[in-house]
Length: 224
Length: 216
Image (tube, rainbow over all chains, first blue to last red):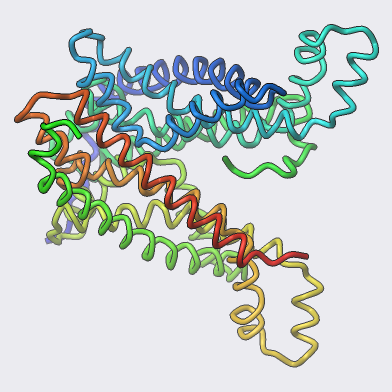
């Protein structure tokens, strides 16, 4: 029996899909911002001169990124269930800690790829170490790591689908709900796949607008 | 080891075995798929290459969970066949990770110097032989770190199979938790196990790379 395509139930449920899409965007955007902050702090610590700081940063990175994201989600949602955190907060915490480790590795590698002379020259002009970092080293690091960040951000957006497992009503969750009611299995999953693809593509293009990101090949940077 | 874990250890280990089995099948299958796609895209076979570009674009833009749903629910409905959660998960992992591995294989193929290819052709080898004997082996040896970071990623991703009802390691741990309710201990135990095994996979990758990388 050939499969009968029927897209009308998908269109009829467009409000749910849009709600889920917006939730995916909110969840990803929040986790992305927090992961970036985490990654910059931990990554900078990882590139520091002090062995103790480097050790802590390495421990964080290895501990966080070698545990499946789903287990991270379960830890916050079920492991710490006595805290009664809302599922959304659990998903944000899990995504932030997990992706933050990847961002940290990228930032650390990026900092290492900025020529040492840049920092020394900045210090020689009388900038404080902090100023040298913020005004001279970080901007160059950002250009170097932009391509890697683009792939990390798109991974984070896709990973956010796992939040559906802990009942966050994002795109995948709504798709499963619609599938359960209408049985238009193929249509709904293809629809949300394309929505994810569009979002990921948009974010990747957006990051290429970072000044200088396109000219500078990320040399010596493995796809962390 | 805490008593909750000891008491349920055989059950958890059975789950871990399933995880290992799924991971192994998916790594082997995904690597073969990635190799095939990578080589075909590298050779720029008309139409085939464009189709594969689309495939890779689609797979890399879709969450793994959605790919598993497609393999478990959507494709069987579309094409009218029956599948088990286990095989849906394995095929989903292969299709998913294959797309990522294809990108790594292709970047490896591109990094092989053109002069080497031309020299090989000049010695009278056919194109197929140059590819098989020279370009592919060098490319693969050089992208070992990338391949292994995908393998680690895949190993972690096998936990998602529990969502479609495969009682692998994470799935069986959550079942044990449902019975015992000791979430911190159980989740801590599986997190630690994943950590150790991911380290092991990375270590194998590092050793292989150190031994096999082609230095130029």
